[in-house]
Image (cartoon, rainbow, N blue to C red; front, side, top):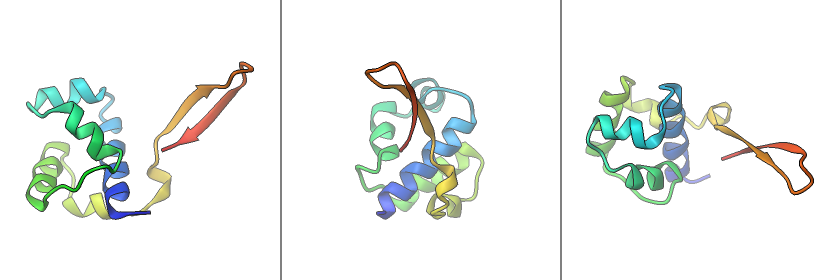
Length: 90
């Protein structure tokens, strides 16, 4: 797994813990939620300064972004074509 994916998964985990959608959470802090969604998916590189800002907003230590703990992946519920529930992890 790339460092971008690890950072993105941890960002998603801490944002999800807040109980808010991406749009609602990041709008509170005047951040572009579409850009943050690409960060959460591990698609872009971000600066240390940007991660520091996010860590302060999320009230976590910046080191938490680099923790490769796979239990922090957010499971999404999906219904397959046969109507059977399935869980996928991002």
